[in-house]
Image (cartoon, rainbow, N blue to C red; front, side):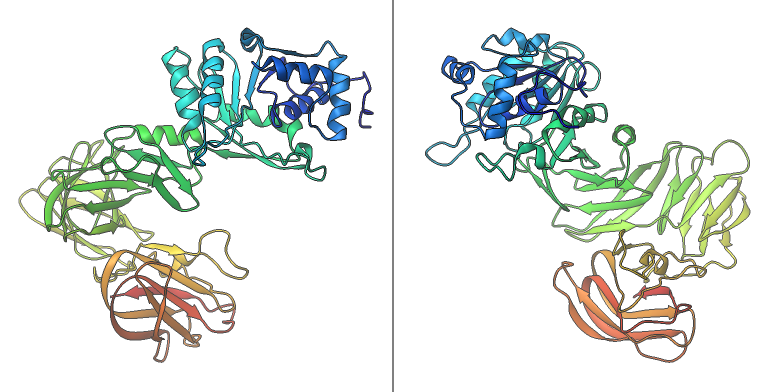
Amino acid sequence: MPRPQGSSERPPSPVPGTVAVVGLGYVGLPTALALFGAGADVVGVDTSPQRLDAVARGAVDLLPVHHAQLACALESDSCRFTSDLSAIGTADAVIVCVPTPVDAHRRPDLGPLSGACAAVVSHAVPGQLLVLTSTSHVGTTRELLVEPLAARGLHVEDDVLVAFSPERIDPGNEHCTPEHTPRLVGGAGARSARAAELLAPTASRIHVVDGRAGLVVRGDSEHTLAVYGDTIVPAEGAREPLVIEGHCGVSAGDLSVLARRAAPTAGDGRVRAARVDGYLSLFNLSADEVETRVAVPQQGGRRQVYEGEQTVTREGIDYGARLEAASASLLAPRFTLTALSGRSLPSGLRVRVADGATLILSGAHCRLRIEAQGRGTDATVRGGRETRVTLRGAQAFPHQDHALGRNTFPTSPLPPGMSSPDAAVDGDPDTAWRPGRDGRMVVDLGTRTGVRWVEAQWRTGAAPAARVEFSTDGVRYQRVGALDGRGRVRRLTRSGSVRYVAVTVQGAPHAHDGLVRLSVG
């Protein structure tokens, strides 16, 4: 049964200890009352004597339901209001609810917020949970709380917890009270997400998000980024080239481990590189064609190798790259090599990938296991001679198949009746993409590429009608024709310089039909 308004009976608090609410304006006071109503011990802190006097007299702008809560709070020993900032240090959790007004030029005035955060930092003690709710720009939590706390020797996740949860209050709207409005909570780390427990009484539902968005940013100095959906913008302007790695679905702990791993480095400073989920990305940031060696660190005894030439090293591989001016390249791992003689592959082993099924080995004597496309074989390399190995049953995709191993869309969640389109470009003849009714898939070639033909191989000869579209930006697509032919393989010959190729099936294919291979050359 809910507690009647004005009743002195208080439910057990979902939040242990005391909560300090800094700022008792139209956000802070309802927040304090909601926490008090849920059973928490609350101390409201405000440096304005006039505001404290108005609160004590009940002469504040509140909804009727909140006036009843305030009257109850003023009679209780479990809720008090003060201007003494030292009260912050006595609380187990602190919620900052200071306003961010705009000036005459409609720019946010962060003066009150900066002062409040400085007071919180100066009185913070180990073990506290600090939550910023004020409306502010990207990076405010880090700039005003995380970094100053670290300067005091209080490190987030180890000594204190810090989170951001933007307020969502519509003053005076009795149909949209805080208790009936959902809100977001983003922790500075996994442990800081416990702010969701603290704020549960102040919202209808809490949505916990990882404030780091699964990104690893590599550069020579720290940068603030704004993330809007799938768009990433340096909030303070780009001061140097950055490499941003996206790691979807990883935990905060795993993301920290990934951030500490060594990244690929190019011998030529004009080239940046990254390796995510085995895929090697190369970026030529200059107006000139560049040939360079790229050191690609790989952990453990296995080595993934890519189309072209590379040499095994103790730390990974040394890859030979050639990039056109102002271009990028995304390389899928073609083979995985594992030593059978000794703990690791010998340094100096040279590997040249001829196609999707064949590679040539030389330079160092060893026995090894070679795997690709679900196939594998053992081989022996003898010093002074080349050893050519072809995996039986593997598809010998030529390098001009620009779709092999590339990223595809849509991703999860998929439309009804559709399976993952990755199966059409994974090089495995035992997997196939099921498009469903009027299904559409897109393959990202990684960079703008000269295309002459598109070819599709289906499981049966009763292939569905399908049209092809090209795009350079992934937003605007141009229809270029339909796949033609008889039997399982259908083809379209059409030239263009494109990055994205889309295939749309017309109608509903039979349940046993599926696209085994989509090739672009």
